[in-house]
Image (spheres, rainbow, N blue to C red):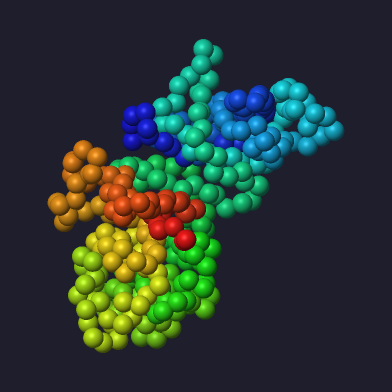
Length: 330
């Protein structure tokens, strides 16, 4: 994770800030204390100046949400005066990994995105999107105490995201959702609880004998032709599914995209393991190098989009591999 394009996710407790508004480029400068830092860049409790650049109206709303409310604070903020922030709040940002210092020695955090402003007591929101396995715990701090970071919560968050993104009407068409390499069936259970028909496709299902959804104990290979060509219930379920998903589906990640394209259905996947030794055929479209890193694998999957179509990217609020690559709902 080095170089000009690298990013990190940090959280800060604001102390005070100053708002610079203009028609062309507006800037919010927050004097803050780091809460969750990044290895070799900034530690917890380090002071920093957080620079956020957004359109005027967006920055005004953001600054107002951080403001320590008092009789004169709002007017002072609009005048460009330094004002106190509500220190019970926390701001989570995606920033450039290259952290520089000014002449006074202050760390300068150049933000790319503001992920959220949290109230006191909110569950920690620290998505991790890192390049290689060695950085899989790039975010420091006590994230293990946060229930949203527990592995069991990932399936629930993913299922809710699927429903919010695609809607029940689409998901309930045909034979419903095909969850590939879902293992213990947690994603399936959360979808079934919302009234959505689901089938788990996994060669080694670990969800008991009466899980409440259909199980196909087979792997998904290549583009799934071996399954869709079958003249039985398995073939019918796979051919007529309305949506395909995979939460860290490992070897089945690329086949999910291939099957979705062949059936012309929507899909959403959270890539995880790259496994370059198992898939030496994967090369990056841009320069032909082997796909060996997580970021290269994600780009490889995005490049699988058909001509005149672009796959989309989102991030889910849990620690770990949380990048979703998906087909647009419409």
